[in-house]
Length: 320
Ligand SMILES: [Cu+2]
Image: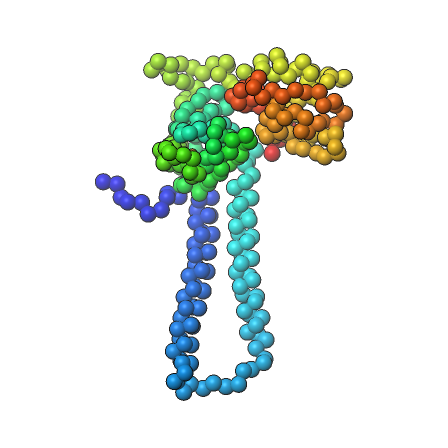
């Protein structure tokens, strides 16, 4: 018999930190609720109409009390603010050495792809002790990728990429839930996160099952490799990378800032590249004509991901 769990497991230091903050919020709330309720009851009994309790004139010099009544709550809520902001920024900014896994939500399953092209559905295998960055999008409606044991959750939205990262600190199997109501079988949109020893993971990653037999992963499984071919036969016609080309240089620019015709600057990230393929004239690079036509319908979402994977693999800039 499995014991009934009252709270999700604490699978990372971050989860522990979130629990501490939560305990602080809960503690402050309970303390003031009890004190205020007790005083209301106490005063309503003590100063009820029939009581002969002492009722002196109202005093005007309660300065100390007034200062304490402002400063103490101010300090308590500022602790909440800075503590919460610190955890929020920790959760938002993935470390540079993170392994990137592509996540696609779909009614009603999670599709996952590892950097070497290995795919899985609803299961996610990761190595222990290495940060994992999830780049996520949806094929249909809004989903939300939720790892309760890691206290991490992020919306997965059609038409854009969202990101989340976590650091698995002990091996084991954990729940993946969809935390955004997404239709009839939303409650069945669950998966398993399997945290393995690093060696075990490397072994797992290098093979895939073909008709029940383990076969090695080959170069053609690599999304960056497929993206290279798409890029060379479609994009390189204009984005030649040479002086005088119609389109700006793309290869090895991923993660850098791009100057735009309207004087603004934009980060070349997943969303920028994807948007450039779909709405090429939304952001015109400085010094180039608005000559590109949309690749929406020409390239499917998987191919667009492959192009992005290729540009990422060629990047010499830090991606974040
Ligand atoms: Cu869902």
